Image (tube, rainbow, N blue to C red):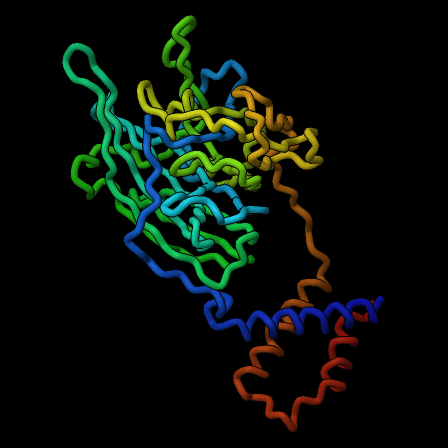
Length: 372
């Protein structure tokens, strides 16, 4: 038993030394992120094709509530970048917020990972404010409040990237990305300080609501996650992974346990406005049991066949979705981590000179710590 813990300790030292050599901030030195002005703007009610999954609160699609954040992991599994110039493909999350004063005012937040014809990777985020039609007083309209873009370098195109947006108690939305377990804050915005946004409710919304009943059915789906592009990308046979969409509720991240598909012609974020605006013809999906064996993920791909809206992407019972397993670690493992940090700190601080790095003595001490 003792020899197992000694081996574990040595492995821990090697892993931790590698992490330290990556830089004091914990980021891979090869990864660079540069803010640029060439935005990949997600539009509403436009000719942009869009296909996504959406969060379901209850299957009657008529219950919803506030959440503090959303997250999703996306990646380009197989994408040839020979599509036409000025064309881009994005994957990410799309979520709605509301106004405290005007019932016809809503807010659409988007965060996407994008790839363009040059083969470069980008992170784009933005906010659109919508005003629903209040006939006969006011026609509906919308505008872009902000858009930000960063070019990612030193990242393989197939590397999954986790996108996260969350509110704090000061009304600030912070955006994070995680690449290879390295998390970085890329932007924080205090929304209420932006003109025309003073009355925003500092929360996102999850769930669904029936805005117009049958036969004029209009379902609003507050949290969506999928793919969008500046125009249809056909005959490319691209594949995009979208997985682990999550909601931040009561301080806990919870996976979306039920997800159906939706096309851009009905991807409403409020009464009048839709993400993208057009069906993504020719794009199908792999999803749970068709043929994927893992829930919480979908692979959108261009095949020439079109995924029908309302397709059940996964449906995991509440007891399985979003559970937090609490396992008490053995005391030896705690000691292993503590010893590892202490030893590495001493080595990297120069307190132990090269001549005094007597690994044999160190291993003897560790071996004694883990005696049964």
